[in-house]
Length: 111
Image 1 (cartoon, rainbow, N blue to C red):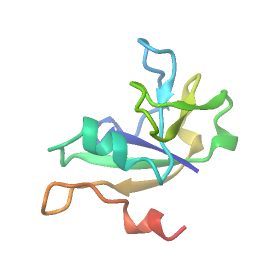
Image 2: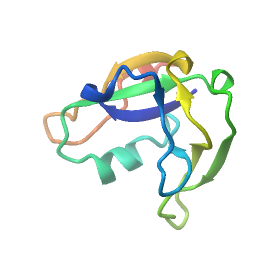
Image 3: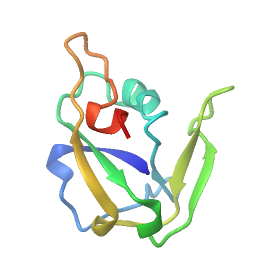
Image 4: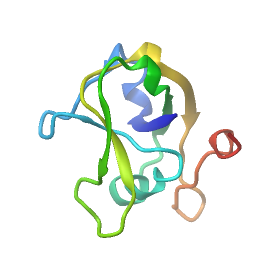
């Protein structure tokens, strides 16, 4: 499974479109999702974590260094095409904790 961070107001949607600046959808896996969450979404309390089955996407998924690259950092799944809503197999609340830090939702941590 791969995951995608989105605002609650942006879901549901027919599909998730690639970022036009780079040509892909920035995704993560459960083990790396805290890197972009903490870097790009600090202070946000309106987030969901979409659980996506790569076999249902219908577009290439490439594991690549982060954007921007971080020396020794994790690789991330980048989806080179739209992700249809039908590929989303789970929707998880993704609020920061009382200290403002994100943690992997328990519903994903035990898979």
